[in-house]
Image 1 (cartoon, helix red, strand yellow):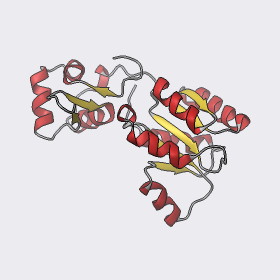
Image 2 (spheres, one colour):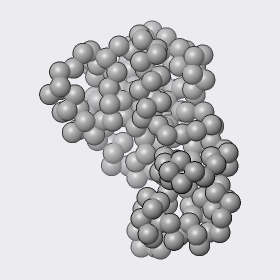
Image 3 (cartoon, rainbow, N blue to C red):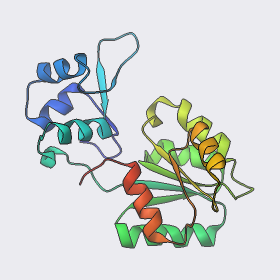
Amino acid sequence: MAKGKNVLTTGDVAKICNVAPRTVSKWFDSGQLKGYRIPGSKDRRIPISELVRFMKTHNIPTTGLKVGGIRVVIADSNEKEATTLAETLRTKADYAVEIAKSAFEAGITAQKFSPHVMLVNLLDKNIDAGEICKNIRKTEDLQTVKLIAIANQLSETEAAALLQKGFDGYVSNPADATEVIRKIEQSTAIIY
């Protein structure tokens, strides 16, 4: 499986699960395996996270998944804080990490790097978190990216509003590497 591939074809899934492609199509058509069809085509696409969920549910060994480490983009213009967090994620969790210092750079980096998770600093005046979220959610190739906001303690109302806007969660203390890694692990279903 190619690096950066977050969505699989039925043929890819068949190889991973050691079954015929027709079997995968039946799983998909019956609703057991979630995904989507390519518009104007009968071709099916299955996000890796859905495949992992399906495999766990049906006790299918996940050893066929040849997925590399988790890829993370940090959207933060504060170079010192972003570099510190990136190094922590690389050393403690063995993640591949890229840093984007603006919303524009975050979009370009997401397209090239195809991250599993994007950490977006809500407190950074140079980062338009809403714009990043909107652009990631409307880009078909980035639909599986999990968006995690970096923010101070949020009230329940603020946290709910964040989820309504399209974020998948938030981290209240980016200096706490354990919390950041736990949130990333919770938001992804990738096994390596």
